[in-house]
Each structure stands twice: as C-alpha cells, then as structure tokens.
Length: 294
Image (cartoon, rainbow, N blue to C red; front, side, top):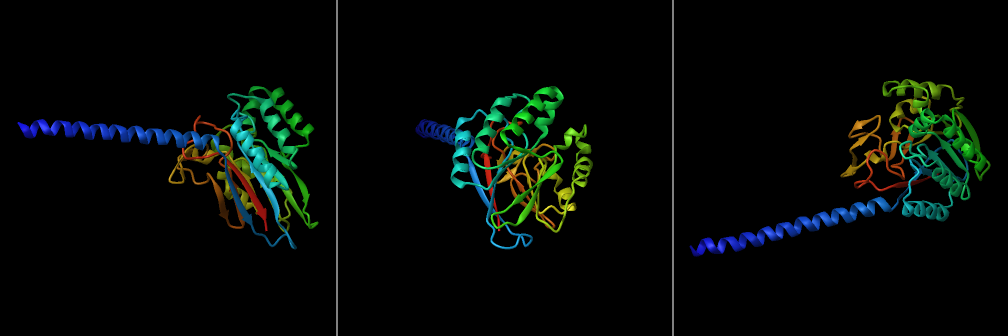
C-alpha cells in the first residue's frame, strides 16, 4: 500500500513537468514565429561573368511579392536596408499588390520609396493578372502610376543599362504567363512564347525578370545569364530549409529560395516580402536579396 501511495505523487510531478515543457515549447514556437514574420532576412550573392570586362561590382537589389503588406516592421526594414546598401538598381519581380486584399495605393507608395533610392525595374505577377481580370481600369491605373514615378515597367521588352565602367548589360522582363493563358498546364508553353519574342544577343550579358521560378528550363533555353523570380514564397513554410508547397510547383517544390544553376543560367529566387496563401510564415522569413555582378 505504501508503494502505491508513493507512486501517484511522482506521476503527478512527471505530468506537471511534461505540461510545463509543452507550454515552454509552444511559447518558444510562438515567439520564433512572430520574430520570423516581422524581421527581414537579407542575403548577398555574387554573380561571376566574363561577358562584362573590366572592374565590375554592380549591385542589384531584388524585391518580390510585396503583396501590399501592411507590416510596418517589414516596410521599415526593407527601406532601411536599401538605403544602407545603396544598390545600383532595384528589381521587383511581381505581385506588388494582392488581388484578394488589394490596396493599390500601398503598392504604389512602396514603389515611391524605392525610386528615391535607385532606378526601379518591374514585371507583373499572377496577382496583377488577377487584378486585371477583376478590374482592368484599376490595373491600368496602377501601371500608369508606376510609370509616372519613373519605374521601368517591362512587359515583353528590355532596357539597356550602362555600368560605371561604361560597359553595357541588358535587362528584359516578361509579363506573368497567366496574362496570356488560362491554366497551369499552359504556363510552360506560354513562357516559352514570351521569351522567344524577346530580341536577345547571347554575346552580351542579359538579365531577365520573370515571376515564375519553375520555368528555369525555358530561361536557360534562351541563354539568359541571370534571372530574377519570386512567386514561391519560400514554399509558404519551411522545415529544415525545405519549402512545403508553392504555386505551380506543388508539394516540396524545387525552386523556392536562393540561387539555382541551369546550364549557363543563374536563377535568383526571392522568398518575398508579404504573405500569400498562408497568412503566417513558418521558419520562412521575408526576404531581400542583393546580388553583385563580379
């Protein structure tokens, strides 16, 4: 009987310890998740090329999937980083706005802050496409507002950039393929068509802005040297550095964050600033990328 009565207090102590441990883990998870949603992850990459002779060091800031976020912490962090880093240009690879909670003024206001820092180049994403379907005049107005700010809106065309050493590189941009097709099954062939329409001199250094990272095979086919994309949001959430799900890639997507190589093409994928499918990021901090052409 004494053995039985002494067992239950010990069991209660173990239960309390287990409950306390679970509560502590939950609090840690909540704290890490909050931190991971209001702080910015800044990454730096170097891109080597023999196509641009002489001294280089041209710095490009890559912003994607802003989704007209109202997160003031992120807004301030992005602007502060850009002002500190002083990039030569800023590229925006689509989804400046969110078609489900569209605030065009917020997206344009963000672009206004960017053009005060460096020249800005922009291409559309699937959320701009959805906005054009729902409200064409609102979409047209947004594009005109961006152009009036001095943003270079690339929709199947290009711009020539002169580097500090007087060498020149080309920057191209294509619309999100959903502007030209109606289903996911058509994205690949549409992307191919959009790229084939560009006038590319493969002997020069060519940059492409294109929202969809999963189309790297097409970008490589046309021998772009450097491609900037977004769209995947890092896989919406990440476990052990692996993305969980992404639009147009499905479960455990391949192209979600960082650098990828396909033949002679380097793809840079941003995890984005704002949120998309999931309202909260899990181990998937908002992302601002700097690349330096060396």
